[in-house]
Image (cartoon, rainbow, N blue to C red; front, side, top):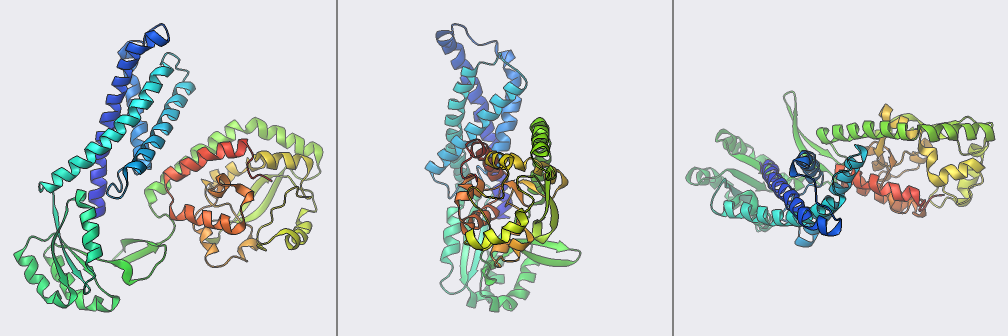
Length: 458
């Protein structure tokens, strides 16, 4: 399969990258041995005291290479984009290494050495990408592990498949021949006389019945059959084939369905929520005391929110509004809500004095770590709406509910409440359509300055 070959090639290239990163590590150490006495007045410790760092460095880089999808589509990424990707990856890796050294209070590792390593790591990663890409193409051009493909297409429509295959030459794809659909009867004879690994059918939905017998014949010969899926029009869906018992099914899905990555996301949620609860336990206690001392309202505000695919759950926040806030909401909606769905007001009259401070610093959201632990929410995802808001959604807006809601999201790091409701929906859908663990990680990192500087907060 093309996707499997791409993943296997990516693993080889990850190994090559790790080799160059380890090489960068030793070059950085050598540089430090030479330059540190000039800048610091003393040299680095012995190499033996640094060798243990290679393992966590290799693990961090491998995980980031995977999360960034560094070699998932090397045919289409340009040199400039590749350099930006390498820089982002290196920057995050160095931050994680610094964080690890700080957490475990390892002070003898020279910070200047880490700086050298950052420069060499970035440079060597670009070199590794260049060498890996060219090696892959060279091996495939010499005939290593080629897969030959026969294209059966509507009249004159084979060009787009031919162009795509040539662009993915690094995967070892080679066109064995091209036939128009009126020559389908000649396919069995062609595959008998020529080495063919795969047959790709690019035909109209009306012609599916015409190739049934042919696909069974190709199956008997062990030849892979692929059918272009634009015979069924979907705007956003990704497609997967699966079997449920003896039932073969084509799945069309818009939200992420990769069970492995979703398990990793859930694991990150549990770890992140646990850390959040520990870090904010004392601030939460102080906030609870302040709320109790300044208002008759309960410390925690509970409301029903809409979660994944319309599931209702109990949502927790620190109380920030007066008792009559619900009664005022409808009146304020009519006056201030342009969308008729969402209400965002600067200097909201329903907020208490403590509530304004908590909202400004986003500290009222702390109890949602409990929602994350329960599994109702995630650290990152579209914000959970109220049932009466969802009742006013259009069909396309309901697609926001196709992922578990989150404490932070793409629009919260892109302007927050300065954005219109329509802009927020667009960003939520962009997040869903482009979701990856890397994107979650970037949003979490960007959330920190967004909260600290209260950009777009009300």
